[in-house]
Image (cartoon, rainbow, N blue to C red; front, top):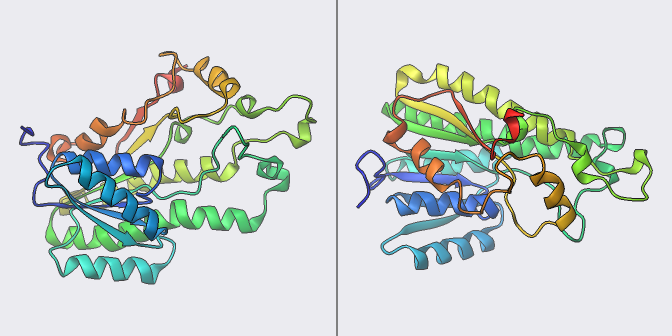
Length: 275
């Protein structure tokens, strides 16, 4: 039985970038507590696959895949109007982002360095991770404020409160000026999301719309052993997060269980940011 404060039965939750690694976990979290979950993603085929998987996992789950380009104001407005005609979106999770991953095949190259970082890449990544979150918050949050109720959750990162440790990405036998790094855009976007969380939390506080952020640490997902060893040495708990380990926090932040919280950033990173 779902505790009443966590129960989202009868409410619609839209998650952007929901076909991705953590987006799908956020969708599972909200489906588990009764929400009608919209799997919004630029990759509709992937969104459909995630929706079908979650429907198999959770009995009576109501999951809807949606093609959505968060960086396109027309796409966002069309989605908002579509759901408004059905009673509106009650919970918005701004999760969409472009994030180069560390994989056994690589994923972060020398072009990530500030000296080589192109304006085109800067614009593209900010358009999705920060402008997209603003456009979705503007459209869906404004509608929530008119109705007098709603929740926005911005998915940030532990790198919203600390700088990336670029030693994690170093490659042997590679000159310093060619070493891969975590791109500057990632820190800028995630830090910007926290600023937007505080701003909108105060802006809509009197309208019944709560806005909070979740800043997760790294999730174990088949990264190279050397990278994992380096990263876990920086984490007091001594390991990376499990894939499903943020679900309860998402449930708390998106439900009435957090009814007295707004404008806050919850950091869950195994203690890395406290050192």
